[in-house]
Image (cartoon, rainbow, N blue to C red; front, side, top):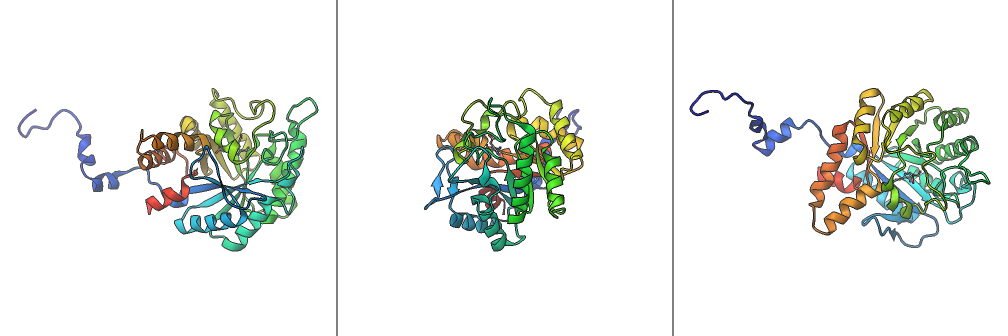
Length: 329
Ligand code: PBG
């Protein structure tokens, strides 16, 4: 192996030797436009309220949300997804579709402020709005009742579209939810409002911090009777196909990092845009390790986002969207 003879092995290191060569040959790129920032707006807050388990993330007041939305637009992120925390919750989650409900008012203000500069996504679920914390209406026996829930989702979709949402993202994992929402939107002349279906949403332990942020932890039981079981992979494809057949325009996998195999399989299987949601627990994990000095925060954040894109997601919903967008510029 000395002298000028060609060795019998490939020299993969050749293309890794300088930052410029690595940049030129990088197969996956991150672009601020691919990132969507999830935001929380809470009714009746005087000041933005930090979320203990998500350092750097707050529950917004309407005003602080408007400021954050402008910053996100300036940073070049692709969109926002809104979650509302109402002052009053009830069994039906009626604040979700009240025209003066916290999230609908926020959508209206942001649409007036920003026009079409950012994609304003409305998460459509009932768990932040119900007193029992489940994603649908509940029978006296404590079962989340699928079909009556669809009527509620239909009403919420119309209210969100009317408030100015550019896109509706149903996350409740009820069977038939996409069909019910599509029918409702079409019937109310919102034929042009797209649906991004949380198609493969798993019953995950990584949602813990979100439930503090959205104050939507179930008061009894858990979500395993409607969200997907973590051991299952083929079922994710079935959920995705079903949502597309019902009229979804784009699909999402959630969580992201522990489910990259699902992201990759879904991306291979479909020809619509695929999103992945890097959830609160994924955020908290990296923040906690970085706070201890155990990992390099910026490097780890960008590596996770790159991994999710590399797996096949076109869009990544991430609490780091604005910070990452600034790093990328
Ligand atoms: C509501 C909803 C949840 C998340 C997004 N939409 C919570 C849940 O299903 O319990 C989780 C997001 C996160 O953890 O960042 N259905």
